[in-house]
Picture 1 (cartoon, chains in turn brown, red):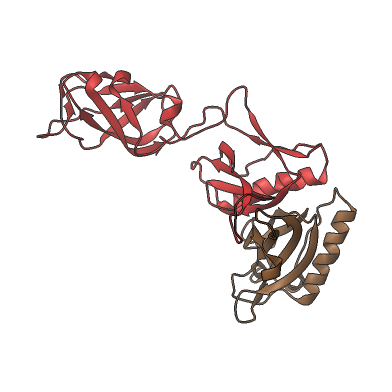
Picture 2 (picture 1 turned 90 degrees about the vertical axis):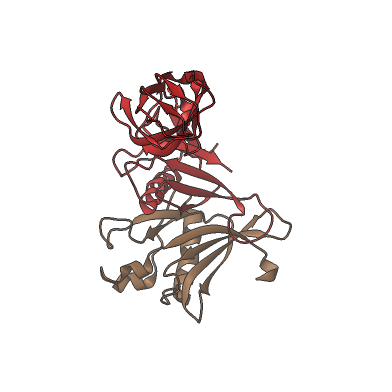
Length: 127
Length: 215
């Protein structure tokens, strides 16, 4: 399990509260564009089967609802490292933070905080 | 062995009537004075004893002149009512063709009249295993979704996984984000401390959990 900051959830934008996402059985992580090369979504792909044969589960983590690119290739690498670390330490629930959040201030840090997260079914062969 | 979180279930929490289609049979009513048969009346205000609930209204129909012939239908669900509250429905003045009563009617609230609540003296918590929790998801100011890593519907996309729906009362109002963070905090704590079985603490004072449903 890792935890992710939720936008508008804390007393201030700089003090977010958290949601969490399961990171066991993850085989792939990638960034996804909402539209027109605006990369603000992370997909965490699980090897956990869904209901239909050939379908598997995926977590979709949405950041800005299509208003800004906030997810970089380095973020994906960082998340992979964090997932590996979390699975090596089963009782840990480390926080994943986008790189951009490190230089953000109170007025723009919400761009780097999670707007929505959902578990979905997908067919990897069709993606 | 699983990790769990405990979600406190309120025992007889103050809540709304179940819906505007909730009906009260004449067999549960007393008072009414002279009853005039007729179609549904205008909604009448209510009072409640003991104090707490407010804003529920009821309209009246009657197939005859006895109190047993009356049916009250909820017109506004109000808020803050409990099982065993005694509701008094105001006098319903006569209007041609409509049901009416010359004296106030009273009835005692039963659980089926109110929004569903799972809590009981012998059922103070819902125990939720968290080992297969996928994510804690924002839903609404009265519901939080805990999605599981377990498909339960054909097809791809959203809403194809099993989930717990945690429903809280709408007063005092909380927010979708606060609910999400409150539940997630317990899940994170449980995941971090095996066998801790932490309790979900609602940060908005007075928020009460009505039901937790797996679907």
